[in-house]
Length: 433
Image 1 (cartoon, rainbow, N blue to C red):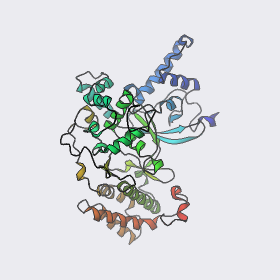
Image 2 (cartoon, rainbow, N blue to C red):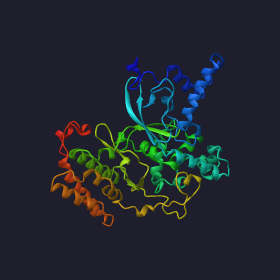
Image 3 (cartoon, helix red, strand yellow):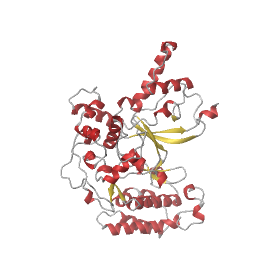
Image 4 (cartoon, one colour):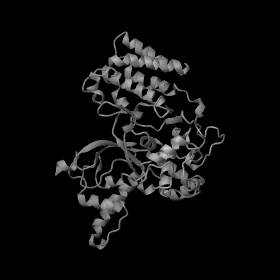
């Protein structure tokens, strides 16, 4: 039995408790509640309410979604410390949690459970919502958001248009095109019937969840509309529950700063390749970072590098351009202020340089990964290219040229062996590796 219940201990939550939790989570009513002892009902309710608050389900529909909640209550998603006979949730102040995920309760794979913002930021956001309506701290944040002018426009809208997202603070929505917003609606995974550019199949609840997610952190939306299965450098989105999202697990880049030279060269080469694909891709979208740090990039078990956190990723549509860029006034409201000051200003779309992401990465990440690891004169060549690539005052072409030279230097420094599973054994037969 223990081998069938996954990688943790078999004594997690008993099956009957998981079943009752699932029923409770779905707001099901029992036909004969008197058949359960009062102490049992009390225990189930206490456990469920604890989990509901932890996940943020008590704040829905001002949340991300509920598409994966059933797996939590069926014990098919388990925090790493669910090791006792009753529900033990981890501390609620962490930004992310390692967990295990199963489709059949027999085979398990590592996943990451992440919040969009910190617990403190969530609480601050909720207080701002109440304050915007001159309501007490215990107000219904969903009711307040539903009464806003922006959401009332969303209720009437058949299609998500640039004016509906104007003034939201995410870099993702700074330069929106209709083509990009249609992609959001068509691929939004928290609705039952995706595929249309029109929001006819969106309930009021669906619209509020999408608007709330876009206003707080567009990371889960980017995972949904640019999936890794189509070649985008983003981890797989598995679903959301309350204010948490589930995605495939990666190890942050900073854990590899002490990696051996061949692995460091491989990761740096991949990182430069990711930035290149963000600048030039078949869909004619130009992605750029407004900020980078090592925790924003992650490595899968097979050595493949991905964007672990897309919250600071902006998108410019090179095919259609921005349909909101010409508007002089920002549409500022409570949705503009949930996680940042209402006066926060982002640069205009026309001022984003093609070199922006490269400069940030060459200044802040690649030196930590590459310096002092290679023999002379290779190290000198790497350091020179890094300096030129990270020089913000240089023209775009000079920075892009330095990045290409750095890739050329790094390419032969990578080894071809099973440690790099994502490209092995292909590297034995293909020169591009």
